[in-house]
Image 1 (cartoon, rainbow, N blue to C red):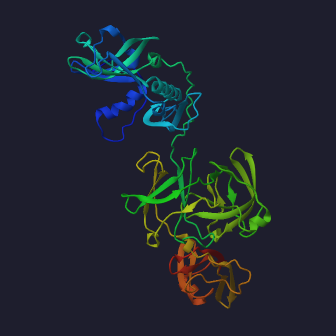
Image 2: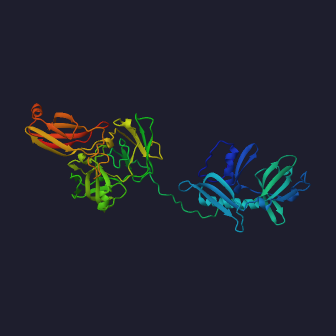
Image 3: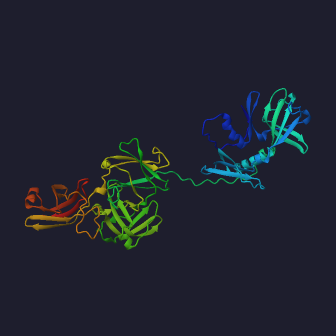
Length: 524
C-alpha cells in the first residue's frame, strides 16, 4: 500500500455497519478528493492535487477497434447534472451536531437538490469548499472522452490524468476506466485541476460552547406529613440541587445494594439552602415576629406574599437537621434579599401540618432549608417498604449510576404521612388526691374546616398512649380510649411519683403506631 501522495486531515469518521473496504473508503474519496489505483500489484492512494498530468499527442493515439477513430467525445445531458448540491455532515466544532452546507450556481432556478449525507466531522468552511467543488466537478465532468493508447503509453492507467489537445487548447481528463490489451482502451472524464488546490475560504475562529461540567448533585430526603392529602402517605420526598444543574436527575433504588432500578426522575432543582442565623422556638399558629431567619440558597430565589396568600398556604418550607424525619414545616410572609442568594425571612407561621411537636428550643446555624413549592417530589415506595432499609444511587440521568457524579445513600422511612398529630391543650385538675388530665386530639386529614362539629378521627379507633416520666425514668405507661386520663392516688403511690414530673401523650395509629408526643410538666 502506497500513501506517500495522500494528504488531508480527518477529524472524525463514523462507520455504522460492516461493509467492504471500498464502501468505507468511498465517502472519504468523495470528501477529500483522492483516488485509489492498482499499480504493479500495489494499491496506490493519491490525492488529486498530486496528480502530474501526462500530455498525450493526438498523433500517438491509435484507432479504437469499434469506432474507427482515435478519440470520441461525448457530453451528458443537462438534465442529468444537478445545479444545486447539499451536504449533511457532523459539525466538528462545538457539540458535534448535524449541520448542512449548500452550493448553487447563481443562474440556477431549479429546486432539485442533490443531497449527500456523510458521517464525517467537518468544519463549516471545509464543508462549503466541498460542495462548491462537487458542483463544479459535476458541470465539468459532463464532458467525457474515449480513446485507445498504444503499448508505449502502457504506464498510464485508471486514476491518471492526461492532457489532450483540443481546438481551444489542452484539456485535462482523468482516466476512470482502463481496459488493458493490445491497446489500452480508456474511458475518461474531464477535470479541472485547480479545484484540488488549497481552499482560499476564510476560516472562522473556533467558537466552542461554554463547557458545563457534570458535578455530583446534593440530594436530601424529607419524610413529611401530608401537605395536600392527595399524596402517598408512606412515601418520602426528595429534593436535589447542584450548581450548575446537570439536567434531570435519576434516582435508582434497591433493597439490597445491587441490581438498582430507576425509581424517580427529578426534573428540576429544589430551592434549597442553609441557615446563617439561629431560629428560636415560637408559638404555633401565631405570626412569629422574632429576628429574621437568614437563609443562603444554593440556587433559585424567594419572594414575599400577601397576608391572604400566606393564610391560604403560600410559601411553605421545611427546616431541619438533614435527617429524613426531623423537619419542622413553616411559612413566611416576607423574603428580603440582603446579598446574592441570601434572604431574610420574617412573618413566619411555625409548626405547620402537625410539626409543632418537632420544634426544638432553637434551630442552630447550618440547619437546612427547603422550599416546598411543588419541586420536591415523592419517590416510588411500596407500603411494605416502610421502616425497611433502602439503597439509592442519585445523579445525572445522562450518566450511569456507576459514574463518579452519583451519590450513594441508604435510609429507612417511617411514612410520616401516616403519623398522627400530637394532641393539644393538655390540662390537669385535682379531684381529691387524684389527678385528671385532658387534651384535644387533632386530625392529619380534613381537620381544617371551621364547619365541623367534631374533629375527624382519621384512624379506625380512638386510642392514646400515656407515659409518666420522672426525669429520664419511665414511671408508668398506659393506653386509653378517650381524650382524658385519671392518675389516681394509688397509681401515684405505686409509682413513687413526687416532685416535678412529665406527662407525654400521643395518639395511636393501627398503621403507624404512636404519633408525635405532647409533653406536659406538673408537680406532685
